Image 1 (cartoon, one colour):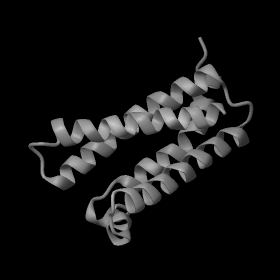
Image 2: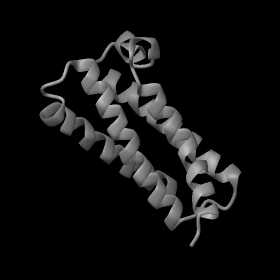
Image 3: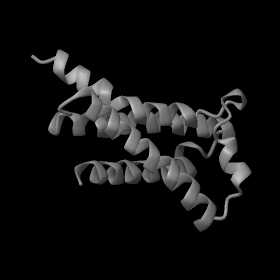
Length: 130
């Protein structure tokens, strides 16, 4: 349940980041730059959520950290495709276009971060104790 709750917090943070981009910092930017900046903000904000989670409820093993990251990755990708296609009506091709690193789309880097961050923070908290 904690993993699902943490993912719901990450979802809320991501939605708020998207709103901030659309009504705030992304207004004066071209859409690709707004996407890139939003992705970097998202990686930072999600990193904070994951770091706090890993500090509060340490992963007992590297394997458990990887399982958490992969679960959060799967939930994020499923939400992205299902919500944005079936609820908001985005075309499948438009959703797949977010994965095109060669076109400057950074979304795959955020997904990679979601997958690896739990293991990174597990290592950090175990090796950087005061």
